[in-house]
Length: 111
Length: 112
Image (cartoon, rainbow over all chains, first blue to last red; front, side, top):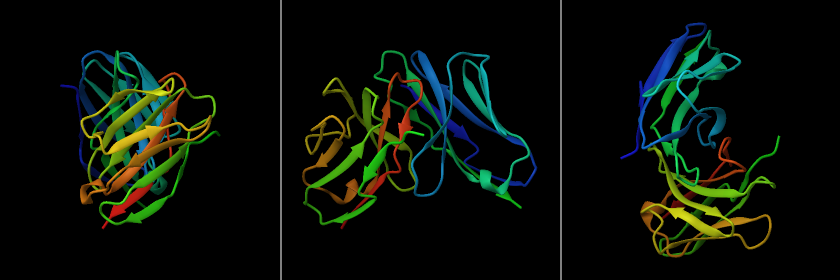
């Protein structure tokens, strides 16, 4: 069964304190791994898609990496506005591009 | 930047009533989806729609649910007879190629 597990469930950091979020997955043929940001009461906001092990993508203070079993979202020198829930999802080969989601990591950045 | 729009943003309905949630996907996209998120839980896939028909649906998407693309722009989710457990945030999403999937802001459905 395709499955996505994110850790930790919640993470509190001081402003400027870098860290990483983990997304481990099992899927019958990975087509893509997606990272989204979700603010309370809002829809998921697209961040990255990764397709193959070794791939990395960056956007501002965020960098996503991918291995054959997991992905990391690295946050460098975070600011309070980076506080949100970060969602990971996988897309299996042969699917109609639908996503299988993790439960998310709630990130709180304290000033 | 193009966006997926959803209406209503919030709806309260009596149990047993019919509800229609509306979505306007991004104009050149070909694949459309409905997902739901019960408060505090994971996002769950409901249904995918391509070439004017359902391409895949989950176990959640039973006979009480239906989708329609009545014209060239709107994509709707209908729940025929709502139940308390249908209370959730419903998200519409669209993509042109599956590489970047855009979500709307959601419709929060409360069944009382």
